[in-house]
Image 1: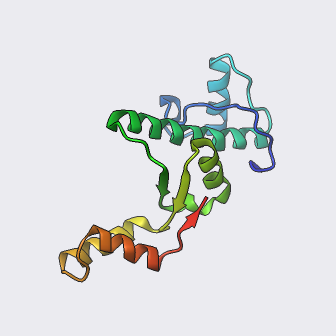
Image 2: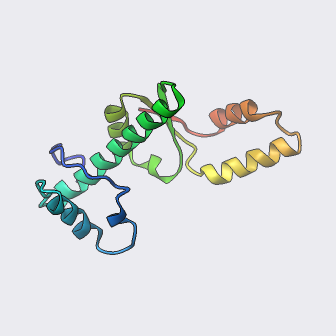
Length: 143
């Protein structure tokens, strides 16, 4: 639905306090737009597209803040976990950030735990070896 909806430029800050507690998130998002005097995404498709665009913009803004803080420029964004199943979000993130996006592994927490144990018992030497093992063992997609 989001992919088929036109880009209307309707974005909101997903980290706003308004969205922290559980509840009627579609209603809260629309309320945020009303409260800020902006056009409100009226259809479900427009709302979902707004969520996708807002997440990608939030990623971009967070990366830019980190680059400013560290005095470094990043060319690649690595995204792990369940969100990587969403090709549209990943491709939109690549477009909006202007970065190459690499995804995987899907089960990053478990993978990291296993790799940490392998480093601790000497099965693999270090973080670089762990990264190489992930590249060989997991599907890494590029956007």
